Image (cartoon, rainbow, N blue to C red; front, top):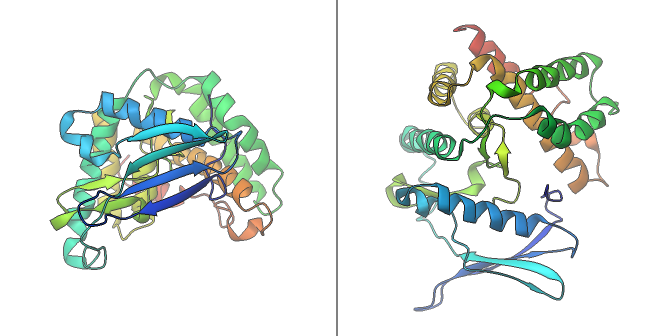
Length: 281
């Protein structure tokens, strides 16, 4: 079952920090009784705990409780606390931070890789949102045509692309670093897809954080070698992922201007990926 959109209007979160000897927790409640987002996140977290080796369990939130109240589903996870992110993001720690995340994403890919993507699943998951981009006046005709070509490229080569668990919302605020940046816990799995598109979590994080072209190329190529994915598909996969992001944003901010939150407003999100990969392919 494909969950409802996981935008900010889907979930209400209550954070209870630890008090004295009592542990803290986070209570996530579905705002609408019809949403499947909470159940979806629970399913993803439990599947990950079964699929990942024990050494990676601390990097995924534990499901403490999952039930319904008044027809609304809720999820309880532990309260996670880091020593503070300000010093962690200083330049001296960036390489260690990036190294851990790359390795973690490769581990996720290896342990969650299942059968290849299917054309049927891709159409069910993305065809409607592709049509939404087609009718958006803020997106140029050139971008629309390239996006159509990219969608067909992935459809035609689906059997050559392994599916993995894709977090879908991997950015700095969803990664809680622990002491000395030796490990982290990755939060908020409501937008995850499994089966999902490979390599896009890596691309999103790299493109939204200081990463050189050499680092980006090396990271993508190492990831692709590990799961036997042709790097030529990466730009198309990343653009397809951003179609999903646009659909999330359009629904979450329906009363606001699309032009402010449109990932295709200034061209294809994959442009830099295409440029750096063209130097090595």
